[in-house]
Image 1 (tube, rainbow, N blue to C red):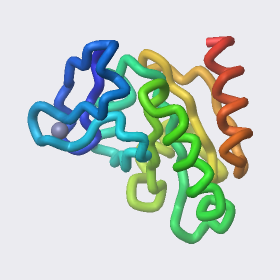
Image 2: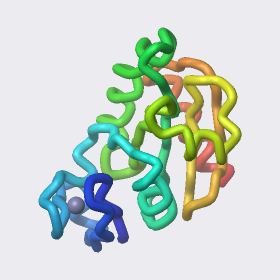
Image 3: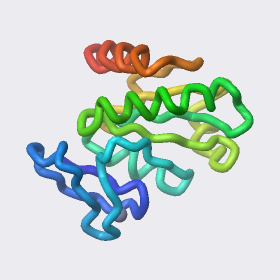
Length: 143
Ligand SMILES: [Zn+2]
């Protein structure tokens, strides 16, 4: 399947059975699917969200937002447990307002789930790792 490198935006072909083996980017060597949320920018957003063949869950957040900071470790924990299944990503909406603006994000934290480059679900407000996992499972079933 195609996985886009969050660092250099190269499209990597990762065999389905190697998804859980910690593949790395063929161009820049960055770890792909390592279970860490990837930091996206306005520049990398479209490539990563649009061309990844795994579902992509994006957390829109900002450094001044208390609930966002509270949720960060929960989001990271969910990313680790769904590693290889869902690509977790974060957008700092202060530094990268274009992606958030285009999607009409009005409050943070807001999570938006994409599949095949299209939004399939969104959820505002902080959630625990378990809640994120449950919400994702339901959203992916409907998608
Ligand atoms: Zn790369």
